[in-house]
Image (cartoon, rainbow, N blue to C red; front, side, top):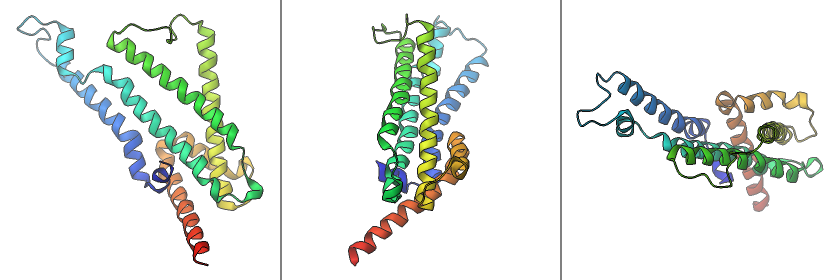
Length: 214
């Protein structure tokens, strides 16, 4: 998986991470507005609005699962850069990968749990004790804020990894601030970040092949 993300072109990642969920949402919205313009939302057979919605819209039940797919692909990109580019970093500048791994999985698990809860609510199934319903609001808020902190730390770590791999030396935040903000606004940043990742991946493979030939 790591090699796939490191080799993938910027447009491929853009389509995978944003094209699929956007296409789903646009299709659902278009169907919804098409239903709104229908002269009679109650069908001749007597079906109510709910039945018409179910017959004409790409069910909202699928939305959480589409978002889970998006989240997994997005976090997969983060993971692949942070872990895959460690081999480009000189031994004297090795980074604390264990801390990154712990903070990486906290927001991933939190977000997927929320989306699974939404899936249960949309489908009308009974929500089990795993759900967040009934939890004190401040606990949910703390989990949300801590997950946001973890995501920002991950972006910090990934941006630092990219710049350290490029410069082959210890870097400060000023050196990789640009990469940090590009990761934050990833829908733009992927077009700039990914070519750098491709080059680092190619350079490392070239160096490995050359060393094996010698």
